[in-house]
Length: 167
Image (cartoon, rainbow, N blue to C red; front, side, top):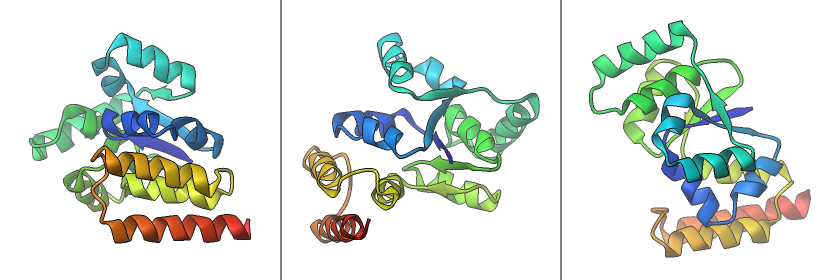
């Protein structure tokens, strides 16, 4: 599965929570579109590439689709439209915290999920220890990076513990 990030903040969250390397160890290809990649600092871009994040280019047809989506949805960033357009390919999933982008993806029959879905996929993979996921999510919640209730955090902790016990 190729996971196309809709915004750079999601990768920053993975880095801050020490979950980037575990996410890559799950067998997913983590990727950003070239437009988003070109918008970040050179230090971050080098770090991301060194960690294994892939930079995706769009075909001319995908660029045109992104432009059309943007003209119909001016509240979206161009990079979000590029990510949505690229995620329309088979075996791709768009991961974004933008509910409007997820809705538009759904309207275009493109698989789109939120950041918490990615954490759950990491848990289901059996390749990341439950303690690593719990620590990472707790760190994100303390920093205010994930808007989740204490009950939702606890539900995920329990789910990851149970899934790991079965693995």
